[in-house]
Image 1: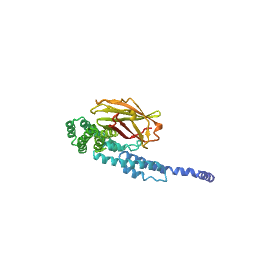
Image 2: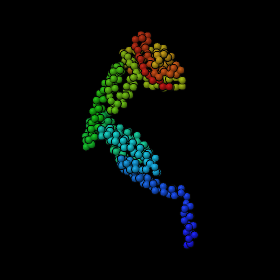
Image 3: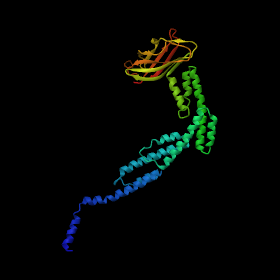
Image 4: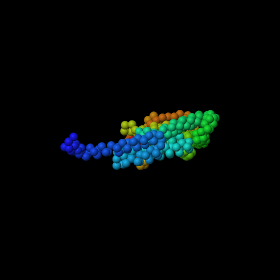
Length: 326
């Protein structure tokens, strides 16, 4: 090969654009970051979230994949925090709350195997508590107690079941007391007793429903007026109401005496449908409707209604703070 040929080859090498040389050198950082991120993902799927976070933080932010790494680190930190809180709840026997908490984890994120195992375990133990609760509700306390004995080897679950039965017995007594007071027309006292049942304990749902019903009811001398629905139909708000008389004698009503007021204390003209003028003292429920034109509500958020018997006008039924659905 001649000297001229060698010089020609060297000139050709030097003619390679500098941009090509730079892009070639950038392949290695991308490969390194990719390998680090893949290893971190594997650790996360194995439940080693802290190790995954630590490894992903080694990715150079000036090179490739920093945004993906940052997103994963954020998800893993959040997941780790949620799982720790859920574990604390589960150790306290609050398996359903632990399960609900894990639902905050990004559904698109692959759950670590540890989390999957914990969820499976919590669901199984929660199911056992549901069975104990169902037996207690049916009054089958002996069977419920026997079931608790069968799970005595699981200290956390056993203690949770025992607490459930204890709370059910106590709360059931309070709920029955409240229901008795309501039957005696002592609705405010009934509400006060039912409110003593903690909202995170057994029978709390039943207590809250009863409280909501009693707040939309009025009782006097065995006669009860209750609202069971509030809805809008075309240009009117309809109140579905029930009247019941468990008193000593029949009661008569003249619905022109029905007084409805807005939360601004303005009277509202209404119409009634289906309500009889006489309510016999036989405990029968008489359903009906109260129709309120939306235009007359004047942006009211709540209304109150008062119904007085006729002609004596001695018996008064009043319900306040009725939320208006518009």
